[in-house]
Amino acid sequence: DNDIDTEFEEYEDDDEPARSIPEQEDIVDNRGRLLVQQPAYDQIINAEVQLQHENNMVMGKVKRRAIGPDGTTVGAYNDNPILNSIVYEVEFPDGQVKEYAANVIAENMLTQVDSDGFSTTLMEGIVDYKKE
Image (cartoon, rainbow, N blue to C red):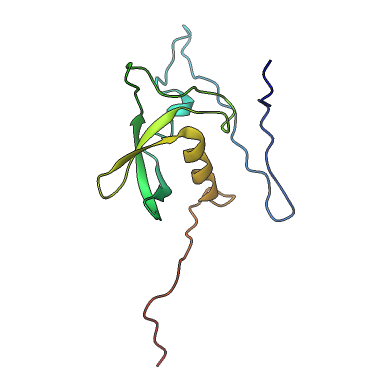
């Protein structure tokens, strides 16, 4: 008995339209062989995303899927981004590598772009401003 709702419902309100992740089908040739060997859920590899690192939000780069001690991928893929638990290694500018689940990475990516897909920057403050 599985009580988890696997149907993903886009959030929207009066201030923000729903952000949707389009369905992607695997591209195949006329013999049915995959043309793109990298699965859609691995499209976040090499993505740069701001994530919590130590006590700050820092830009990190998704390097690869995390591999467990038994040599298999950590986590499980799900079409629903909220339930996708594959774990990826993210490298930060200081050289440290941390593991994050795909759903955490995706959530951070979506909160860092506007409705047109452009990056948004959050300003923390102005330092050393002087009016003459």
